[in-house]
Length: 257
Ligand SMILES: NC(=O)c1ccc[n+]([C@@H]2O[C@H](COP(=O)([O-])OP(=O)(O)OC[C@H]3O[C@@H](n4cnc5c(N)ncnc54)[C@H](OP(=O)(O)O)[C@@H]3O)[C@@H](O)[C@H]2O)c1
Image 1 (tube, rainbow, N blue to C red):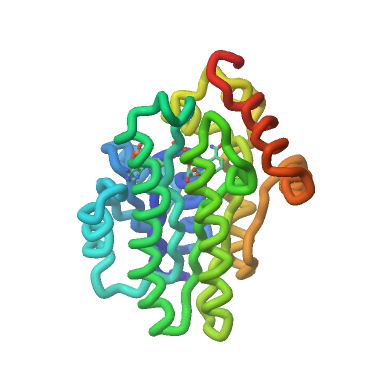
Image 2 (tube, rainbow, N blue to C red):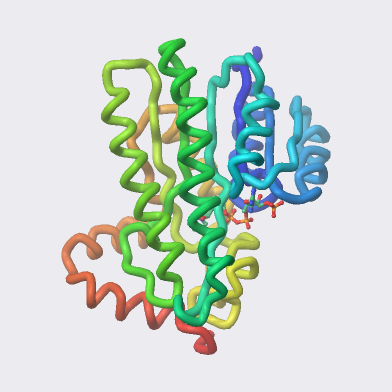
């Protein structure tokens, strides 16, 4: 039976593709979006598994890209919004290209805020809908050598809970998926393959997505995936930020992988 429309951003690969797969298995029709033509390959794979899929190639780091996604949704009700598109950028902040650093902010924060604002308003008007935002355990840690990215994820982890509370009297739920290091294209895109975290064993994106999807379906406030990541978030609340930054330095410093 159709569950209605699920919009999944950043669904061409990694966690987003697996989130789309979870939605499709549960009977959602999909509108999936990413910035490159790889979204078509993802759609083919999902269709081969029986999913009903529309695609949009749009740069969600720009207001125009988000507007194009909103236009593609049109007047249809969105039952589930999985705002997952995001990128990282490794290296020392002052050595980064400023444009690339700002693009991390524009995609992870601005693009997500624009999309959630539009879809969230319409969900509130209908008094139904589920929103899943992909944050990160990085949001708990000051991110030496990944400082802008961790800052964007701190924003999303925090924003998600605030929005959820504002909607507490409605039937719209907001859930934050907070993975740790996961085996996706993320570290290559971020230029972090020569770091300890880039080389470390990582979680399976399908497992991560299943946990996030289940939390969204249950209307939970959020889920930190994986036992060790749960431990890390507990410690992050106990240790001083300066110690956490030092720990992050060891994981993310270039050339130490
Ligand atoms: N992997 C990890 O260790 C990890 C841990 C915690 C949180 N996360 C978060 O998980 C989310 C998904 O990342 P991932 O790990 O699955 O990496 P990924 O495989 O690189 O996926 C990133 C997705 O975002 C899309 N994307 C990138 N730039 C975009 C843009 N400007 N406009 C629209 N879509 C864009 C990519 O598609 P195109 O390349 O086709 O544009 C891709 O579909 C991100 O928010 C990331 O911060 C990842």
